[in-house]
Image 1 (cartoon, helix red, strand yellow):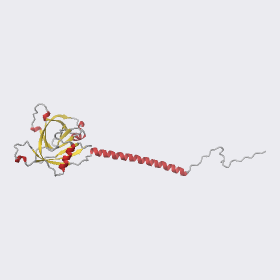
Image 2 (tube, one colour; image 1 turned 135 degrees about the vertical axis):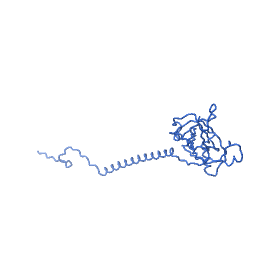
Image 3 (cartoon, helix red, strand yellow; image 1 turned 120 degrees about the vertical axis):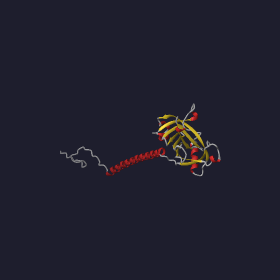
Image 4 (tube, helix red, strand yellow; image 1 turned 60 degrees about the horizontal axis):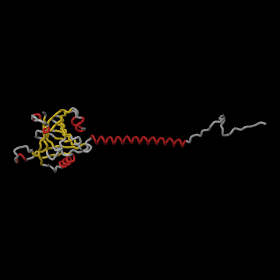
Length: 251
């Protein structure tokens, strides 16, 4: 008896026992590739958004702390020098005028920068004055000498920052011109300050690269201080309802 066998029509010739792998669907491949591309685009956009937000926030902080954002207030006062004797109608009138500009800086507007211009006819030095209410320091930059002088903030002469701002806001209107008086303040140079890094950002920016000296009030020094008026310089300014003549003398 002869046995006759037949090959399965599903099996290809010469591929006995081979596993058939189905071909991938072209549509499913296209969909998968599109999802990956979309995801990459989303991650890229998200990263760019984070970078841009960082640049915006950083730029805002830099502008806030470095670029002055407050306006400059111009003020002038009419004052009477009560040290002029005798007191007569001729010596009491007319009043003298004092001019200056002030700008409030810092995160809480707790730093006042006062610009004292060159006087028209009086023998005073132009100056830039910084009152740092946070560090309780005052710095004078004598523009004639290009020297800096630093002393503890005198709260009996300088108004608190909010009151000082209100004063200059009234002066800036031009309708408020107080008739006030002149007080005198004697300061003595005591020592050289070699490192101004510890005086705060604003005073450092004012005095960096300049000869800087520490001041002391005359009445707080022990003993009799002999000085020559030739070694003294006067700065007339105001940070209160009165005008102050600051006399800075070297021993």
